[in-house]
Image (tube, rainbow, N blue to C red; front, side):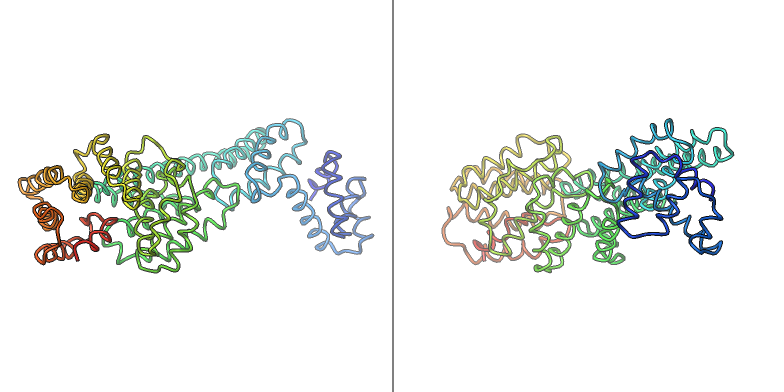
Length: 468
């Protein structure tokens, strides 16, 4: 390993002293002797004789010392993204100011570490440098090919993240509309991400693939719920994220996974496990900025439902919605925040303000293509008007909803007609004692109010108290 001798001879004083001090500290006497001997231009035969080594043992000793020097030059990419960026910024100066052997050792160690974690964007910088310093070498073509390969990988990852963003945007649209065509679009985007993963089975794309599958199972009703093991996918994704170095950009996706763990355990009724993740997620004020990665805004409604289940609805007042950071252009999140705000004022028994929050949602958003959410907000508003004894306003809303369902034959919302009968009886009786007939209609509503067309999840506890 002739290049080891050259590398040690050309190490700058600071680098050499650091390696030497490390070896002294670790009492690595043989490595230290080899390092000092090569620095002083001692011949191999003299070193072998002094250390009493065989040829094979001497080769192993040199190889391991070379690895140690490489590690010192490149640092530990696992620990700190800031340190990694510093190393990447050093590449140009290293290539122009250090002997080729030192620069190559530095770059090859970086390459090895980055390959382990599929860090394609960073690898592009490394391969670009390796191409340049091997311009007159027969390795130039090899590194050019690797550079091109990782451009393809990088583009594939970028496209995969773009597909994930589209998936979450469509998922929000589906949440508000329950349009079957949008569900088909979600399944098509799933197929696209599987195609990318088959071409580039990197960890990052596997994370994206898993996030799409998990969300389809948690937030949609498809055949995938029977085919996929959601908890297994969650744990597999957690394992991948845990293995990624702190320097990986995808490490910042961990709060998204915490949220999905919460949604999954809450959905299957595992309150104890859900509570563990609820505590993590509830303290995260920036979770709503992650809606390009996952359906994190669903936490706003799930939080209300979970606190209702725990009889801890007073905790809704502890986190001010003004403290939550979100994208104002994200209308899906904005509307869900409005509903969340409505529930806070409802539990504070400030019904006038609660009605104002719902009216604001209706006035500031166009729900032309989103009948499901439009219907939900109007039914909630009608109920609040009944509590306020604003019967004319409630009646006007209910007549409009009834007319829409009947004239357009919206069969998926026939259960709403049962709830309208419950509310209309309240209006007619002006809030007097609930009748048996009202209770019957409400029970029928509950029986039909399920699956994709379920409405008013966050108000069902309160409606049950009133009508059963």
